[in-house]
Length: 364
Image (tube, rainbow, N blue to C red):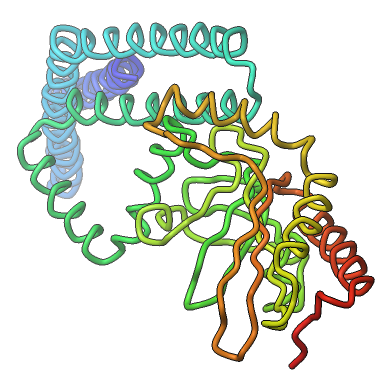
């Protein structure tokens, strides 16, 4: 660009010098004409004098323009020398650094593709790498090309503080998202529950982004008894993992949970027989999930201090306030089949209880 300007100035200078020569020749011609023809006519002499003054003025104007062009040309030459000696090394360093950064990014992404088998984690790691590259590139440009870096850093500090105060929840989403990428506390496919303004929301995570977590509401006991609806797509801010209570049914690839069935019996019922019937039916429907739960527990023991894990189905009795004996049946079931298994066990237990005269259900 500087070379182009310099060449353009040289062309203008050549034109001006050519015009200057023509004006100088015109003045010389007038002087020679007067001397040769011995002009004595006053009117003609005045006209020739006015023409000479015009050409002299034009010639002096062109000389000033040539001086300005020379000054501008010298300034451009000086800028070009300063650019070569001062700015060009920064540009070359920046180009080499960005080339290395892109090369490193490509190599790292290929390693992630080979080493990380989980598709969701692979996608998250790649996004995180892209963000890191953008941040490093921005900081590099800031430090290399801002002359007053202290002023720029102070300005960015004030702007950052004001932005955090005004939209702290929005800013908190990003560290929450980074935390999720590294810890796997929540991941796509997990079934979770969170409470927002007293409403319980249960569903499967279908997307995680820096600003929000997207969840598909499933059919479960909560949607059946409380919400009376399901199938909605729910969105909540990513920073909820820091500010709200979130329950993960599938942490560390857990596939089973404890579920509870409550049945009210009359106080005159045969509780021992009721317990035997309930345990038999429960074990028939859930015993195959006990081994799976034991393996999951063993994997959790490698990371957490967990002891005295009991995966057996249990029946407990507690006397209620309404003159009924509450029977509580705990059992292990896959989190995705909880509602179906609960329905099957409850139906079989009630049908069996109705066959025995000494087991009576408490009706409202």
